[in-house]
Amino acid sequence: MFSCATALRASVKRITFNSNHTSVLSNLNITNIEAISYTSNDTIPIWAVEKSSLKIRDIDPFWGIVSDKYASSASLMTIQKESFYLPASSSSIWGNSPIDSSAGANAPGGVLEAVYSPLLIGMPDYSGQSNWALFLKWQSLSRSASTAGSIINLMWTDLMANTVVGAKGLFSDTNATVQEKETGSTTAVVTPIEDAIHYDFVYAIPAFVYLALYGAAFFFAILLFILGRVRIGTLRALLNYTSAGRAAIMERHPDEDGVLARTSEWTRSFGQKNVLFKKSQARHEALTPVKGGGHNSPLPQNKGPAVTELPESDRGEPQSLLWYGGICTAA
Image 1 (cartoon, rainbow, N blue to C red):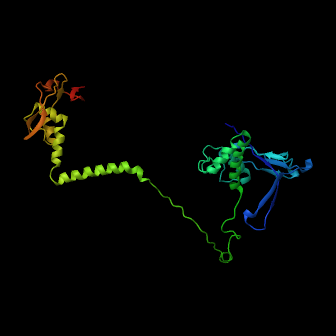
Image 2: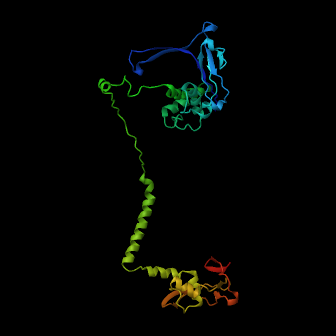
Image 3: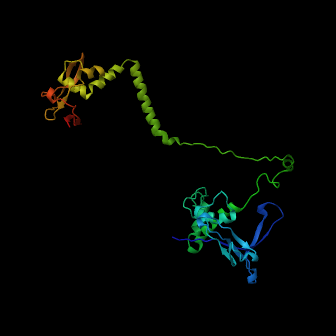
């Protein structure tokens, strides 16, 4: 594991290049880059930073080489050296700001902040996950401490070049044809970008299986309804038979028509009855037909009184019931 610390240093270089006198950038060849060797102290550049009373977090100070006559200026801090370490700025804390910014003062620190930012929002992918060649390059540079720092340098140089180096657009005179110059119009080829959602239907197989089973059950139910095998009244009767309240009342009053009565009628006739369930008196018995409301109803019959109707003096709020293992008891 390597730990890196970075500082920005400006210096003057002598660059030798040649060109074949065309405007195509690929025909520009850089032959040499070398540091300038100063023959005397008088030729060494004077670097200056604007002097401000603001805090670092609030300003991107201007800096650069100034003339000798500004070496003692009260509004500048100056130093005469072959190179110059750039001062800290708000961009090195908050990143580049697109509002009221100067590339010379804002870009170097802002780009360095972007390089060290763990989020890299809006930045190219420098991790190597999406670029195999870049991954191999980082792998090679990260093998030793002497070359690991080059990773930061290359990332900063790439972002900095895209930030401060301009380019000629489609509407520049050098790219326009003679006809376009005469008419004042330019034809550009564009590729529309459209949002699209793609889905792999392999992941929808469970949903399709469920839909098929649900559809089969639905159409089977519709078929039974059409053939008269199923009626709403039949479903209502089945629900009434399985109602705990109605089953308890019919156990005490089997001769009264309560199982198939409508909810409003059953509430008026039996809704105010208080019933006490006793665990010790509950017994499992075989199901026997019980006459109730003109229909044969399979209801459990107990030899002992599993359900007891409370006397008038003991009636109060309905008891809460706990059901477990087929036995219910008062809570």
